[in-house]
Length: 265
Ligand SMILES: O=C(O)CCC(=O)C(=O)O
Image 1 (cartoon, rainbow, N blue to C red):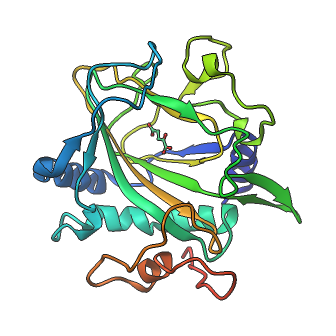
Image 2 (image 1 turned 180 degrees about the horizontal axis):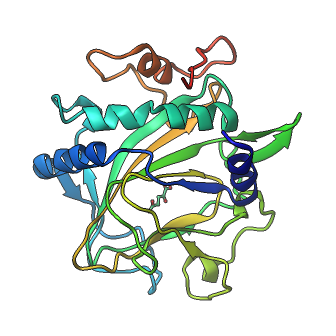
């Protein structure tokens, strides 16, 4: 992780890295999504809660099967995302060596008319979501790697956040998280296909309704925790039939010491 990346992630609670996946990897991931269309289910609308700004008719599309278990070659792009060397480098720094996959991957597919998601995070009492700075380095709880398979342009909708709010002390006012009151602090993040958006789950963040009618939003989210912590229920076992040592390490249960440090190459 470069000094610039450390500075910006610590400052804002998120960072966008363009072109981490190659064009071929993005194309294969999109083909995998299309081939498994029958496994995508639209969840019932409701994530917008009672926000008029975020409400739309449809819920977002999600995979009903873990894409890491798809047959080859369809699992390959998702396995690439799970243990990508760029991601390992970033999270070795942010979450510490021995970080683990907490939960995911989860697909977010949105078309025009798909609702947003109420903004959440920020000064939460959840002890697994935090950002500290001690002994000369960042320490973070649950963090997200969101891989973009399609283009997100300014004004399209999709992921939005309040930069810097992973360190905020006051809970965000209801009118701000419902987007009813524009204080000028919520930012939508444009990102090209193949880019990696990392963010701290303690950041105030959520989803804006998707506006384009000629392009879907397809984002694949993996959530990681420090090696000693679990936000979700720890995994029973790695679901990959022939896992690499890095994949096995990412599926280790939480424990205080002794977890494998993943090399970032
Ligand atoms: O990517 C998004 O649209 C929001 C994701 C989100 O809210 C979350 O992961 O908690």
